[in-house]
Amino acid sequence: MLLLKVGRVCPFAAQCIYNQNGQCWGAKPNRDYEFTCEYVVNGKILEGGSRIPGDKTGKMKVILE
Image 1: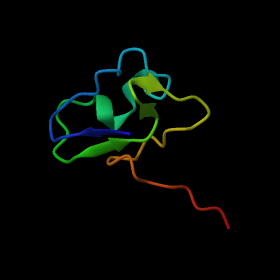
Image 2: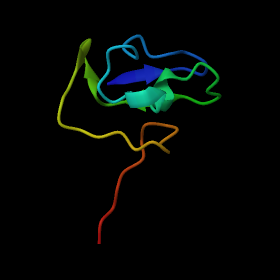
Image 3: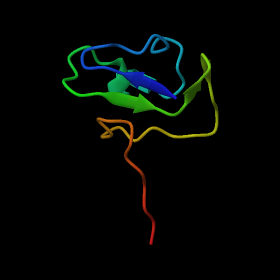
Image 4: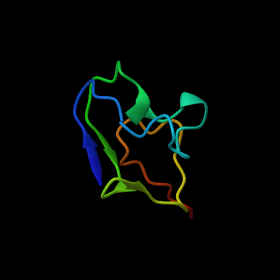
């Protein structure tokens, strides 16, 4: 897991499959809150997940009923 402090940009933003069209909030330098990314583990990007465009903290989950 990767924890990005306020204003820090994800070091994997350029090659990350979850940052399509710059939508991942971890890649935004003007973020004023921490961002948690569970898709980066030990410096590697895990596949098989999905990033919700409106998820500003990285902790948002989709609940289906």
